[in-house]
Length: 471
Image (cartoon, rainbow, N blue to C red; front, top):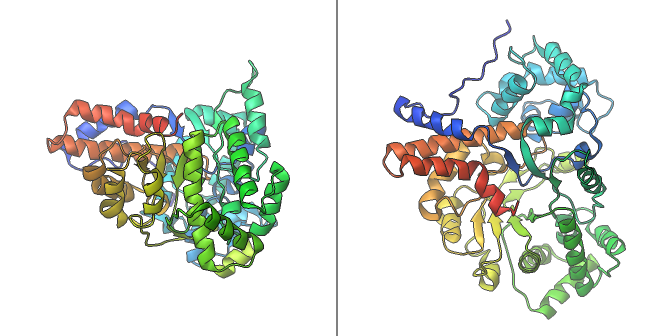
């Protein structure tokens, strides 16, 4: 029997009626604010070419590692879901998903997807084996219409700006096309910017690193087999990214390790990693040195620096060999920040014109390390609960563990950090509801005034992200 799909208007708000009333008022004041999406992984090609998304499987299943990692954990082969398998029947893949939708009970993916199904596509019954074909046909038919093209959805959900993330080796042709469109009086005016993600040419253990150095040389005209040429190439590409709208860089390192080597030591280290004959300790030290080098360049050019450490990438070696990166096999790790960041902070920590946003997958570091660090150093801010913790309970833990020491204004609001385009408004809705509930509880406990909560709701939903990312 098909069951109704209904989104309760008070979902995620506090259960206590006396607190829920205030939370409801706060949420109503921010629910319609524009979306600032300052960091994510959507494809700029979507907005440059504005083509239809295809079918339900192409849009909602194949790109979303949150979804297929759960299915894989329950024995569903990624090939059968259409991952790196163009030959699969997309309807059959969707049926596999629908038949197992119950696996997502209690997860943020269920909450985001139900929002997309109900709000974006108007579905009134829950996804299940019984309704699989109804969902597939309805969504696929709607995706073929102009109202569901990327630019129309961007406008429909009141996205003020969205940042994608590209490698220094990317030519940014799609961003150039978007900017050309923006420049025409009759063109689409949506703001889509890039962010500089140099991991493929900074991490010596990144697959293809040696070839990437040569591509880096060819693209910039610098000799990226020399330390000075390599650094010059980064400065050149950073300037190009900034000319394409970038206001930030992003660094996905295994750890938060930083180093502050002398120029001669750094050059000797680079020679080792560029030769291909290096130890894993050299790779870690080089990544550490490059975080400090990137911080120095951010002080020069004003790009906000984001550090996303603590993920054991591609933990499933066999899966990585068959399917490549970002297939749901990344696992959080314990992460040290106090000792790891000290070399960088010794050099740049007191710079008021430098902005470094820290993220973590190690929640044990929130109160012990991150909040005290951000509550002291002028250059540091804390990014929101990230990845595995971008969830109702994760957001609550983040606020409870960092607010007393770092306050609200050493944080940067919310960013969705997603590849799944339609989950962006869903995720922002969740964050706004959780934050409004947290603020309502502070008012009920007489820790802040109601007018302060109203100001904070606006800041957490919109103002802080816009300010932190210079948007």
